[in-house]
Amino acid sequence: MAMAVLLRKVWGSVLARAAAGAAPPEAFAAAASPRRPQAAGEYGSLGALDVLPIDVLAQILRLLGPADAARSTAVCRAWRLLASDNGLWAFFLRLGPDPWELVVFAETHLGAGPALHPGLYYDSSPQLSFKHVYTRRAVVPGSIIVDGGSGYCKYGWSKYAAPSGRCATFLEFGNIESPMYARLRHFLSTIYTRMQVKPSTQPIIVVLPLCHSDDTESARASRKQYRDTLYSVLFDMNVPAVCSVDQAVLALYAAKRTSGIVVNIGFNATSIVPIFQGRVMHEIGVETVGQGALKLTGFLKELMQQRNITFESLYTVRTIKEKLCYVAADYEAEKRKDTQASCEVDGEGWFTLSEERFKTAEILFQPQIGGVRAMGLHKAVSLCMDHCYNSEVFGDDNWYKTVVLSGGSSCLPGLSERLEKELRELLPAHISEGIRVIPPPFGTDSAWFGAKMISNVSTFTEAWCIKKKQFRQKTRRNGPSFVNVW
Image 1 (cartoon, one colour):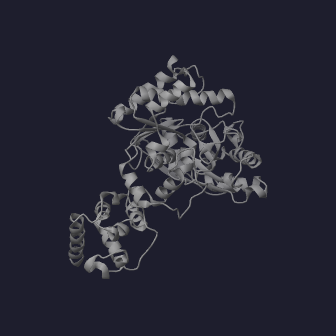
Image 2 (cartoon, helix red, strand yellow):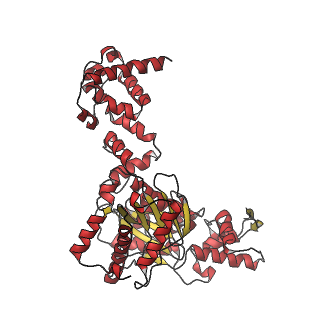
Image 3 (cartoon, helix red, strand yellow):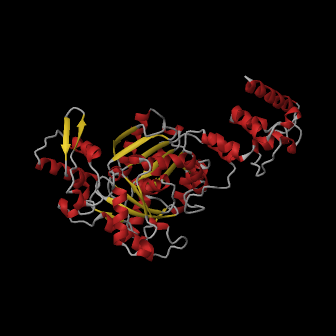
């Protein structure tokens, strides 16, 4: 009750001074003050409130909320400085829907756009005007996010906590003579229909799976062709702004990094992608291992059939894999343990596995167990690290020592620990020292959350999006594209 009376007294003072025209409307744009006074009177008279400690007034502003705190900046210089305090607006940002550490990372590392990253790693004490950040983030439009994975596509609103829908993916790379324009147009139209939204109302972020990963003229042309075709499709549908970012880059952002190596276990293959300051380093080399989630599921199916375990579909096997399978820290030692466990699959009852639980994922490290002729995951990652070490990338010599896992099968328990252990044993000390393998920060949806992080950054539309007029001008300047032949 006493606090309510005090708030009414404070806000009555604020409104009275505002009515007297104590400060111009431009005061709303005042920057945060680095000073932290001990008493409010240092900034000018607040009448009877001058005797209150600064922390009490700060708490009052917190209780008033961001809208009234912003209004108070138009009253007088004292209120303007008090209500522009960085700590106050950091408090308001912490109350928002996005995790604080992701907000800080996004604003400090991604605010300049895809081409300009101010640093390699997360800075816990950035110099930001949180009032400016709060104001800008409040008006950033909601975007549609379409994460076109190699097996499944996830889509939804950037303001939601998770994707709202999933479906079979639309991206089938390979022959550049395929009708890409028609396929993309049909799929994106389907997404808009399912979300019940008109394309012209919201920006869109399209998450791009890695394609044509070689550093050749043909591969570069194919990557550019796909991106230009995507823009052409969306702008023909009257989308106001488009942002497209590689899936591996977004998975790295979700782990609060702009440089490192992303190991993406896709539907059909696994990609090891070196990324420096938000750019895929095709010139260093993207390693590809010819087995992915589908191979793991297929191998578990074979193991279950060998034990005469019956099931209705491959979907059942995939569900069992997700519930029971894991990666052994030591494969030979694990075989001597009792590892039996059971799970229930809706509509089919209970299933019990033993050695199959860890043998399924072991083919990532020992492909020959599953009859696959491919490089082990740890060897492919170590090869990529060796290439990074020998490259002429200047800056932090340790930029490639953070490995981020992504993709559904990378969520298998024990994978990050096993991969880190294998890398330390395989690589020389000058490379292996400081290696850290990070599990998917947001599970199967890490790339989607990386896109969500970008979509809510205060500079999103200016720094990350391309608009129709910009695209058309670029197309005219660079000559006709071959997107329209389909």
